[in-house]
Length: 182
Image 1 (cartoon, rainbow, N blue to C red):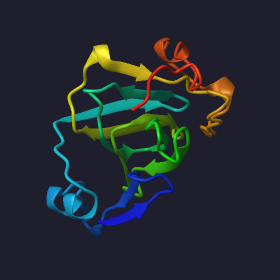
Image 2: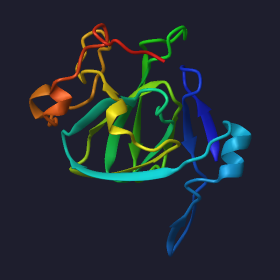
Image 3: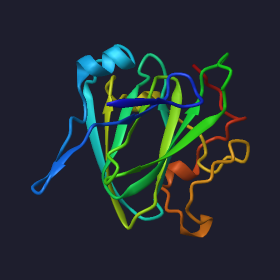
């Protein structure tokens, strides 16, 4: 696997080695030993999968301490714009974000450490999205930021009139109103 550092410390793009022939392809989507050698110790305890259609925006979500989660995210089918926002108080990139296109064709992944809000927008007709978490989901510890926060100024690459949100994701506070950081 090739590890690509982003402009935010601890946030990595991972490009697996793909082996293909006339039958199709094979790749390791996760190898604990190699991950820990190149990025750091991790113990993933939960895998999640979602299916969504074009225009869906999920996020920007996080889990509060002590239930915060690091995530390794990837697309099985389709394409998303994956976004991670640094919520680590004292970080030189606090309030900044990285946006990476992930597709089923590229097999590219994004590692998001604890201390980040996370979301994605669906760029294809349909997407199947998977992620590994290093902590179990705890509903009472949910936190989130409004997807279209003007201070974050995220270009989700979906026209605003085509965005599909859950009712819950319409109600989140802005970054300035957020009363939580890591």
